[in-house]
Length: 109
Image 1 (cartoon, rainbow, N blue to C red):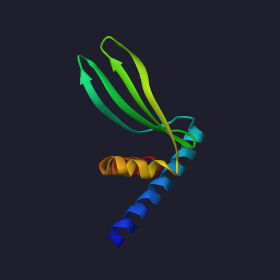
Image 2: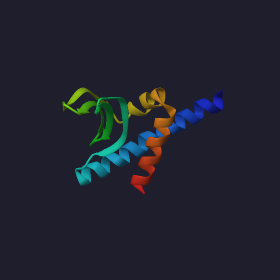
Image 3: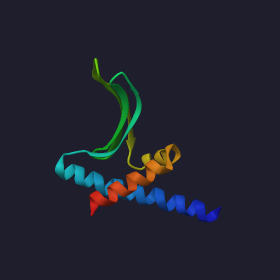
């Protein structure tokens, strides 16, 4: 149990550090980094998708509806500070957490 808590704490800190480095890259390039995209629902050529992007000092998670006869629209938008996002992501999905860490490690190299 203690080892798992330590591993989670290290993982959270590692992702926080990666997000800070990524945010510095975004500030220099003025181009957000897409952390992940998740298709939530598809129906008749239209779909709902969550797009999560790293901006300068913030993470923006948007629920976007588009496709088919539907005009693209942002249905929901959540904004997180760099230090609060890793814990939320770990509680949401460990797989998504690991994918995000991998993506940022590749981008930052």
